[in-house]
Amino acid sequence: MLNKYIEIKDEVKKALENNQPVVALESTIISHGMPYPQNVETARRVEEIIRENGSIPATIAILNGKIKVGLTDDELEYLAKAKDVKKASRRDIPFIISKGLNGATTVASTMIIADLAKIKVFATGGIGGAHRNAQDTFDISADLMELANTNVAVVCAGAKSILDIGLTLEYLETHGVPVIGFGTEEFPAFYTRKSGFKVDYSVDNELELAKAIKVKWDLDIKGGIVIGNPIPEEYQMDFDEINNAISDALNEAEEKNIKGKETTPFLLSKIKEITKGESLKSNIELVYNNARVGSKLAKELSQV
Image 1: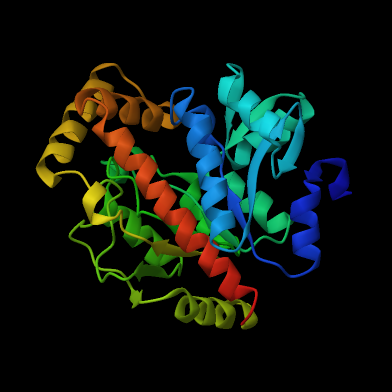
Image 2: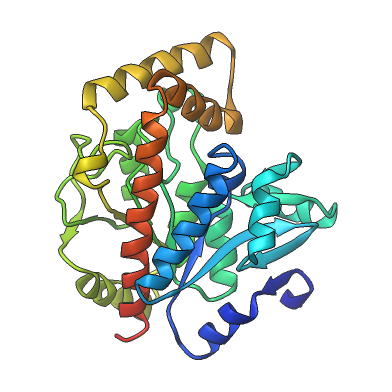
């Protein structure tokens, strides 16, 4: 039945059948996160980094109503240029498929599809979370509920710093999602290495992490794992500068009454404008860094 909806690229299918490491990648970063041609250049480089570190990349998207697990170079290019690409979270998947549309997968939908394809590791930029004032608005990303339910390890540079990181971590704790710091005791805040919030556990290498993940799923403890991998020091932004930019962007979003799934793309675009492109450079470098760790983790997980 799944074959009716999902097409797994031959290289990815072969790797999965032979217990070789595969890393899932989302596609909203391509269609909604960056301008062309930086988006496709970044996507290609991320795939190269995953290969260089011993795994097979599987970029996930919905093209003409078909779920694709692993994209060809032409498909990457198409996705990067197309104007009619829907942002596809959990609720959107059935409608994008049934209508034969194009969809770029978020963290939540990439997790769902990776799990269907039996891919255990997913590298992304940052997870969604509880937006500021979520205690009043209930504006909480579907990513968090997916992390509570779906067995995929997510390597990220923490939660996007436009969010309320404290509320995000409280939500994850309530749902029993382990929040791990990769080489850090502090949960990273996307553009910066520090957030002021501690992780549940800190690990120093991919093997240590793979062993803990294996135990979790061997015991059938349902749900994902958040691996907070800080942006490399040389690429992080000044803490005050980025927080001032975020504050200005949030104020403008409120003035323009921008809400729901339009919020994050607007804020990221505005922050890029305020920081004169510096935030985009940081964004690209943290994604590369997560690809490296994700690839090495997938490799260790395939061997433990």
